[in-house]
Length: 90
Image 1 (tube, rainbow, N blue to C red):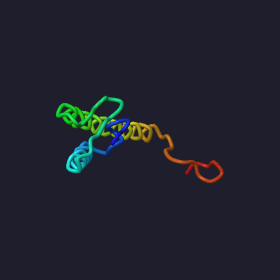
Image 2 (cartoon, rainbow, N blue to C red):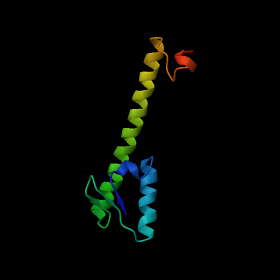
Image 3 (cartoon, one colour):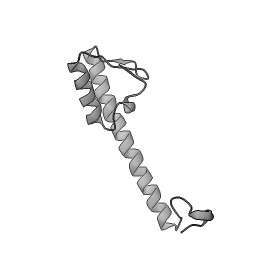
C-alpha cells in the first residue's frame, strides 16, 4: 500500500498505528512517499509511528490555534460564519 503522507492514513496517531497493525497482520507493507518510509523494516515501522504522533500533534495544535482565533474575533465583535440571505449578517 502506498500513501503520500502519514496524515492521510488516519485522523489520529492511534488510527494510523491500528491501520499499520491490521496491514502487518495481512502481510501488506506500507510505503509513505514524502518520508521514504517502508514498513518492511523495523526502522520503517518506528518512523511511521513517530511521524503519526507528530501528525496527530500538528492537527491538535492547528485546532487549538483556530479556536483561539475564533475567540479573539468574537471578543473584537467580528461576525463569524456565513452571510445571511442577500448578504445580510445576523
